[in-house]
Figure 1 (cartoon, rainbow, N blue to C red):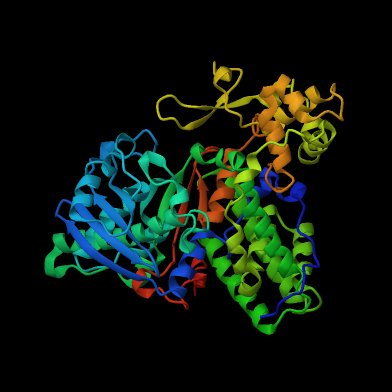
Figure 2 (figure 1 turned 90 degrees about the vertical axis):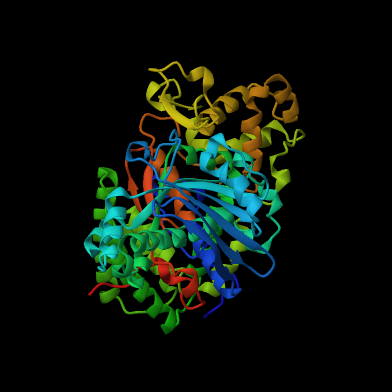
Length: 562
């Protein structure tokens, strides 16, 4: 693979990248958290075991799955439940689930499992301790689960058309970590190499959950069918992912973590710029791109959605792929700066979905240029949130204008521009988005409208002497501290601010969900409204017994269909 001495093509600007419509069109890539994890586990030859699997004929019991790395062992403790259909719900207000889990730091004893059994199945109503790194729950896909158990118990494989229509046997409705429900704060594991990239504990939990789900359905079929039963084929098992239902609770995350989200975006943009700066592509790189492009087309063909917004985007993406194939057929391979040429062509020709798919795909042939950047994804700059009170007001105004110039020109007295308000529900302490002028919620509004707040702060600053230190302004106007903090953070986090209105009457929270989930490595985005989305995780990934350096990376791209 070819190295470049320096990035000759600059990163795309925040003004281009940080629009919600583009963030809502991002795709997984080499830097996605799931792929970082599977590559590491394969490279370090992690060892997997299942020391406990105690589940009865009703599907009730517990199991333990261990993943042993070079220095630490992590154990998924899974609890299976016999859930009545009327209690099955993906909503956060649910109180019972088909399965509940915790990722345990180490190998649990019988006493640990007993303690966890009294708390993990309760989720929010229970409490774990710092030996738990994550807590999660999942529900069966009702239409597929019984079909699998019935077919396998009779010695038959499931109907592949039914498998393809759903793609998972269980879907998680929450994977909590970082102190939630008493679990360990991230600081406990932040210095461990295998946990330094974002959300690695949560990604490991989901990876092991997928193995548990496969084992559980095979177990239930065997108990029902006895000697007549068969295990599901490896091909079908590999095609299954873990579903996930994600709602508004995730959307504020990228607003509340400007440094961390900046790092994700900036690392991806740096990777894209590095590859665009490759002057001449090797034949191997070109072949890999074409091969994975074909497999991406298969993925897009399998991408189904019931939501009109995503249906239209998928239709555009299929047209984009057809146009891309024509362009690649008509244009000689290679040339000077071929990846930059391709990106520029996409910017002038394709939808945002197509542009961002190209941006992800061009990274694939270049692990030597891209993969090392994963060490820059975490937020290790704890001092970034300290306000520099000595900064002159003129400098603060300049920073606000740089990140929120568009917001300074917005009419915030127009109800359409401030129609929504973010608040936290009293019942579940979860973020919600309400109608400001129809509901009595403004008094409970959360600071999740940084653009509006920046405009208000800028207006207040205009009457102050620009040479004065900003601490004098904040003494008089402490309500603007968060805006000044964000403005100063922008010096190190140019991609930390969304360049769109998060409280307008037309805001689509699913764009924020898609952005975050794409970095997880999610695929098959299927919005169910403008406020929640279903996805698949680890579909196509090797199971622990098949994980190797040969299988650990490109599993996310389904093999081409005949």
